[in-house]
Length: 189
Image 1 (cartoon, helix red, strand yellow):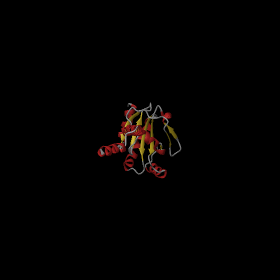
Image 2 (cartoon, rainbow, N blue to C red; image 1 turned 180 degrees about the vertical axis):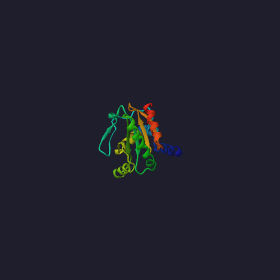
Image 3 (cartoon, rainbow, N blue to C red; image 1 turned 90 degrees about the vertical axis):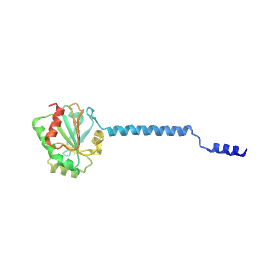
Image 4 (tube, one colour; image 1 turned 135 degrees about the vertical axis):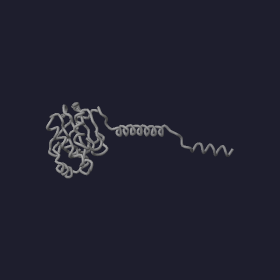
């Protein structure tokens, strides 16, 4: 009889699964599911055909503001770079040459350089060092980088005249002709 009483006492001391514990576990599972979905979405990145938010704007180092909404009707070549990035330094002369080419042949192409996680002083020195004449500005708060989900620099995104992503280049361009060909592909030339 004593064995039965000991077993009954042990049964009563075991924690029971309550509705509160179930609620906590359910909320935790839901949170982890949402976190997983968001992580996959961020890792996926953008793809050709995606529309880019038109409210993005940047004020260049020269004080001019560019808003994507105002650039409809132009092909927009967006290049993320940093002064501390060696591949960016190799790519910079090709970007400048391609910019000059399009400035001399078309009026519907805009190059826009975005300095990513850089200091104002170093970014300005970089622009001067490579004689970059296309608009360049800081990616304040990495807002642009977050929209484009960049993974590093250099990265380039070309938007078509309707504001849709038409071309993605991860890593540096290796020639002026490669840049011209990429822009012409978006232009349909």
